[in-house]
Image (cartoon, rainbow, N blue to C red; front, side, top):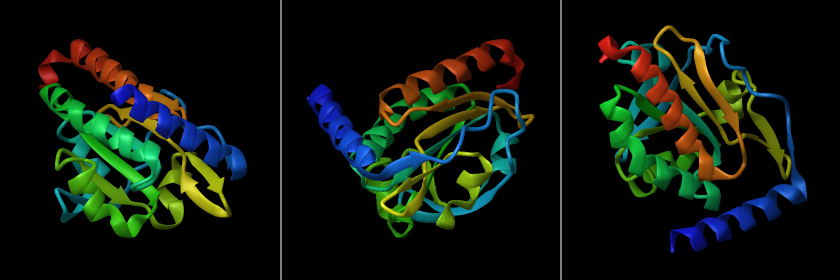
Length: 188
């Protein structure tokens, strides 16, 4: 069932993107300093303010940008991150999803699709996405492209991965956090 769901979402996303999308530039590279930000969002439907600086004080951060709440691929990606959130937490990592699309639906998306497991934040005008160089245009709207970062507590980017298909983002993020965790066992 999951494979069929992924296939349908991938086909839907691919069709939508091929009609009217273009990427606006390459994402920040591994080794770059992650721009600090603070955004309004939700966890389990409750409002929160997410601060990258505060989250990094607890350990690595898995920051993933997605185009729009409740779109097919973004829903799949949220489900997959929700399933993996406990694994990230065991390694001291915080997961945060950020979107410039359907920002008024963040609260519901955090409950329904993120399954109360991790926070999502609204990026009105894609300002944070622009700082992270992960923008795209769809039908005249500037949105955040599907890009995942793993950021070390010192602010350095350990993983920078852009792919419109949601399937491999969690796998790559988990591998990067595991590698960091193995090299920094005292950080837990």
